[in-house]
Length: 84
Image (cartoon, rainbow, N blue to C red; front, side, top):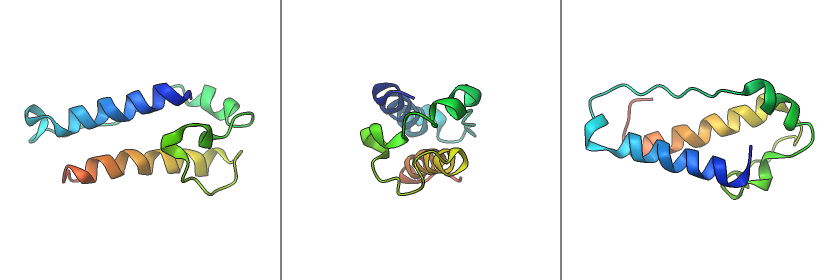
């Protein structure tokens, strides 16, 4: 997880969700490289990314960190009034 790649991922997701072409299409979010994330979270907290500064959980907690990331994507989807 790098600062810029997560912001780019959120931006891309927002573009896809907000596109008129995807208004009546189901969108599936796939979070890959989970094995790498699981190891990296032990060394680098997700709060290094400005978009994740709001995370208040245990910095090395894999499940809680992953849940927070999922919630950020859901927030974007809900802004576009998507059925999540």
